[in-house]
Length: 216
Image: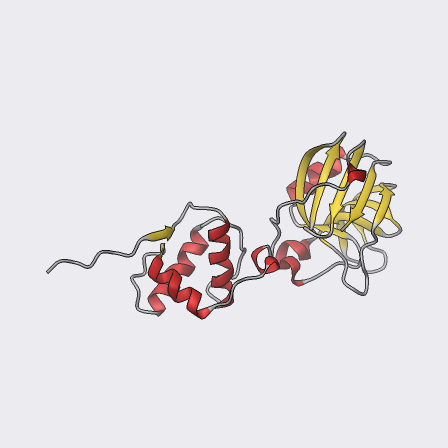
């Protein structure tokens, strides 16, 4: 007897892109994946797909073929923007015009991104998280007035490493909570960064007096 042809493979380990990001978001909806979405088909994604396939009597290859994908589509809803970018990675939008001159931390609330710009050129971009509705991050034009590498909040007693203060007690800083929970949480008004290597590099480059623009 001849074996039935296998279904075409859409994505497998090593692939990346928007399709993989949607796959991961849908796997999260059915509790087969708990990290990401990252947009990269890694070992965790492969294991999640394999488990999903095995549970439904499909060949547990770990590769997402058309049959696996159709089964997953039938069990899930189309993920929204913040499901797709739960842990960051949203592409940055166009910089605010106020960011195009000088040394600027250009912080976009719409895309949840921070651009570090010098004379209109973007040197680095990173995902950020903002304050909750009860403790919102202020919008406007500010200046970095204090840098504190090992800062601890005097109000909340929580660590704020690599703090770049720009408005009252509000600062750009690394957040252990953001790194662990993504957008499931929020700050008390600060701009949280989840990439420790990125914020360490930023902290080394930014000077007191550099401009900060927080905008929608």
